Amino acid sequence: MMRRTLLSLFALLFASTVSAHAQSIGEVRAKALFNELRCVVCAGQSIAESNAELAQDMREQVVLLINDNRSDAEIRDWFVQRYGDAVLMNPPLKPLTFALWFGPVLIFLFGMAVTGLVLLRGRARLRNKS
Amino acid sequence: MRIALRLAIIVLGTVLILLIGSLLWFGLNPQRSPASFPTSTAIAPDFSAFGQGTPLPGYEDAADVLAARRAAEGPFVVNFFASWCQPCRLEHPYLLEFSAANPGALIGLAYRDDPIDAATYLTNDGNPYAAVIADTGSTNALNFGLTGVPETYVFGADGTLLFRSPGPLIGALKTQFIDAWEAASQ
Image 1 (cartoon, helix red, strand yellow):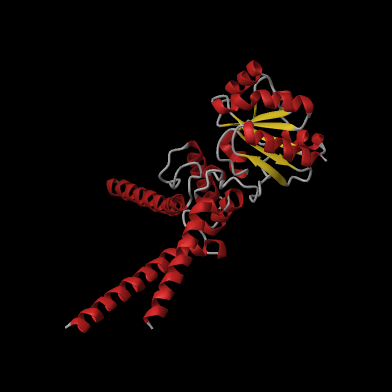
Image 2 (image 1 turned 135 degrees about the vertical axis):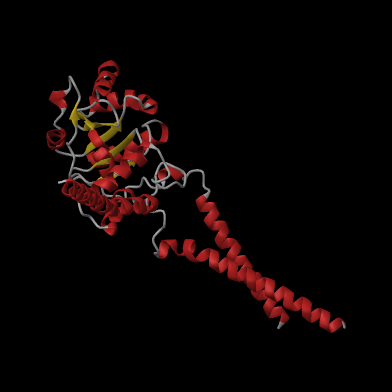
């Protein structure tokens, strides 16, 4: 009798951990999406970081959409349709944002090229002197 | 060789400086407020939950937002407000004036507001809205891409977004709103 109660207790415990795990998949997705969506009224904060009222609303909406079995891409699209690309923390790659994505790399390469040339010329000058 | 190199550096450098300069000139233009950046008319408000909300006590007769939209039969204006919102009080006299001149055209949604507080606000300061509800759960706010209160949307008769004011209808925003409304009404 005692053993049976213990066993059923263990079964209950196990069942509850399983369901908690199943729930946490949605939670993990929600947390990831919170970090990807910008709080549009805050300066450079995601809705995970912000406690603005609008960010709270947006977090609740993400959870609602997850519970509605929408995919991550569908949820992102849901917000982009209503708030525009600015709602994404990572701006999408498209002709308008090429300067944003490749600009820093180009400037870095240009700087490296100029530095390299200056150094090479300095070395050549030294060699000419000696 | 050396001249060609120096020339290349000068040309590339000039191009870079011009490029960065024009980006900064555009980006740091004080006329282009960062607050107005996401609030363009390029978004598509979702009307699927339009009309869902809580009626304000004492304003139950004016709670049918969808009927008000149909009755407008032309362009209509959706205004998000709240009793706790101070800038909303700045535009309130103009909203009253607008609704007197265009009866039935203005629909109000109370954002993150207690229905009783919103009703008290309208009773004390005057009700400019042909229909008004509290936007429970901020469903409509998110569907409209709201960034804050007050925010005002001008829609054509077919529901296309024509103008969006990301702040109180005073000063330049008021002028732009009037222009958009006149263009929509023609």
